[in-house]
Image 1 (spheres, helix red, strand yellow):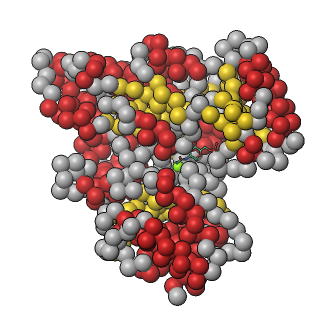
Image 2: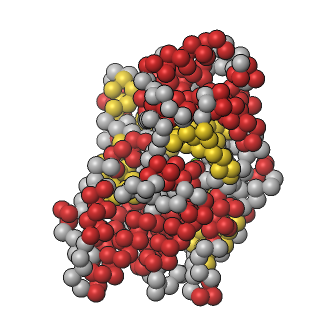
Image 3: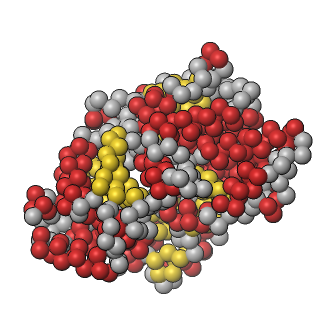
Amino acid sequence: MASAQFPKPGDHQFQYGTAGFRMKADLLDSVVFRVGLLAALRSRRLNGSTIGVMITASHNPPADNGVKLVDPMGEMLESSWEKYATNLTNASTDEELVTTYTNLVKETHAFDVTPKVVFARDTRASGSRLVAALVAGLEAAGAEYQDYKLLTTPQLHYVTRCINTKGSPHAYGEATEEGYYQKLATAFKTASAGKKFHGEIIVDCANGVGGPKLQQFLKYLPPVAEGGINIRVVNDDVVQPDRLNYNCGADYVKTNQRAPPSSHAEKMQRCCSLDGDADRLIYYFIDNDDTFHLLDGDRLSTLAALFLSDLVKSAGFPAEKLRIGVVQTAYANGASTEYITERLKLPVICTNTGVKHLHHEATKFDIGVYFEANGHGTVLFSDVALKRIWKHEPQSPAQKIALDTLQACTQLINQTVGDAISDMLFIELILAHKGWSPKEWDLTYKDLPNRLGRVEVRDRNIFVAIDAERKLAEPMGMQAEIDNLVGKHKSGRAFVRASGTEDAVRVYTEAATRSEAEELLQKITVRVREYGNR
Ligand code: 16G
Ligand code: MG
């Protein structure tokens, strides 16, 4: 039996979480083999649509790896299937695996068709070994498959959608890496025609797969001498595996609130960082007083919303024809939410943490902008919006220019999932249109000081969050205590939630001053410890 080559390690319990399966790479062989079976099953359930499998552990250390499934339109695996992934990977013997699989074929009403799967991986050393396990699983399930080798996560999402929409009115593009570069480069050139880029931008690629891919992409853009964007790629070493995400990358910058030492940014220079699989993006700069300024996912979101709402107006659309909305989580800085509602006059929806929740809510608008504060996000255009945008008749040359730009944006933005390369080009485009340096962008509003804490307790599951994780339903009485503490601080806000990825509780606080945010964090942390260890 094929699975005998990939035995489940000991009594390890696996769980398909918000980011798929992710852990030390040497625990993953059996998991990836079984994900191969599951991908085939998912394809059969969807009558032979192509399913994507990405092998990556994103911003985790080099010794980790992970695997996740991509649904046909490039979305994350439908959440009702996460439990099947969990069941399959936990079957302890080959016999149990066969039984579980056979039952799933029935339970999911899988069709009797040849499954189709595409896959890719990031640059981790364990990647090719895990690909072998995946292929064994796919072959055991009788699947047709195509290996796209090294890709960023969003590229694999793009390719999956292209394959499944080929020949339809919703065709998304050429299902190749080159097709991806061509689509984005063409859109970027159209949307930035005649605009000037403000100096050089440093792009830190976390020594991950984004490095070589961005280098490759640059070949499709006009040269700097001809007015093209001036991108300096740093941290693109994928030869020494230990350097991946080490002292660099979006997660490092966001968590440590400082630039990677290796980026050597000058004062006031525009910088950004991707994460290890290039689906997260964070901007930053160091001002003339050596103060570090972070432009995180909230900033990407507010800038995108500002630009798109202006563009929609300038192109001559009445507001009700293209409703723009923004989706955030409780982690979004209160000042960003206020800016969107009060200044941009746009609706904001708050959802649970995790990209799939934001993505889902964003589909409810004609143009849905969503970003997590950590830099993962994108913009979604509904089918109706796309139709209106492509059919619109501009009434003046100025409307035509705005419309051309808006149309190009729908091509530039990767609508399947947050995509650091695509998001970066979009942000660069906006800054060029506005003639802004990061300083003007930073000045659009002032972040409220905030703190994020991590508390380990005996049982994190007693903390039950409701209202998009802004309040605690349990333990009884705790929310009243938080409200009481928060009420003592100007612009105070706080929430507590159990982490979905670690055995810990997260505490977020915000207040008018840094010391108040800190004080609030300390006081709430004490209460979390007390309740969590009872
Ligand atoms: C996962 C999520 C990320 C979220 C984080 C929260 C995806 C692809 N990733 O990494 O969006 O911010 O979990 O982690 O959805 P936490 O539950 O440990 O705070
Ligand atoms: Mg990532």
